[in-house]
Image (cartoon, rainbow, N blue to C red):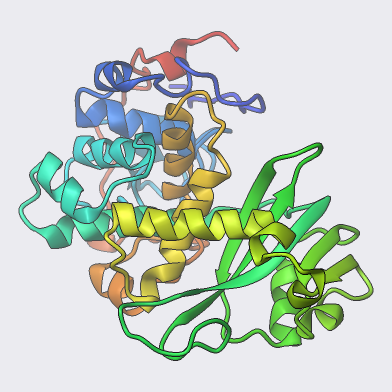
Length: 358
């Protein structure tokens, strides 16, 4: 018996080979759970199998799509230790939800997903979508660079009260947007912040913007200290300029308007503060990939993050929406360990992602 070795994929994902180009292709690729499991296997172990329990690299594929680790003698599934861990929902349903989430221009709400996929409860649809959002939140981000606008905006409910910075009962969100030459906008970043003080804005800028970039802000007194030393800061007082705020900082105002419109349209403006960051991360994920020629690319990127995410229970989703890193070790419980099976099948199903030439 020989262990299966998968070649590393350093090239960008290819439409029609690494991910489906359209819904018809999606249906043809993933007719059953076996095909879905093989796709997750292929995405997760790009450079070859690695046991999540003992980190051994020698293993064999079995007929049921799982792996047999030669070192610790455990049977391992590509879903082990991911957001799909021990799921009772068919993978075909997970994949359908992921496709609807990424292929729809404005995403999909839990209420809509509940209706189109026929879930037994709204709670199931909400939990599935929020696990996807946590996976998106966990995604690594390249820092913004070049010319970048930075500002804050306020998200709030129906309660009336003070407007702008320091608004009562509302959420303050920092926004950063790249400016492209000669015109247009690049990527964005959105993050909830507790206040608009210099140290808070400094942490946001250092986290999301590459040193040496030029930062454009309004005349808020917090910005000179937040952007000093490592950045070229250009602040403009809105009152002193005689211009409207959206004329001085068009990028951040455009993005802020889009995300608020998206929340109102797709989610009817309904969100809890504890989960707002996950919604902001979903919007950022979409906005920064808005020029993708195939929506299937977003589907592929989402599943990449799903197999890199630690499993989350419903209680964790509600109580602690912040994503966790994948555990360094995933120990298979002793009662689930098995003796070596009588036969092993290392053949790989014939799927586009397995058979295409490099």
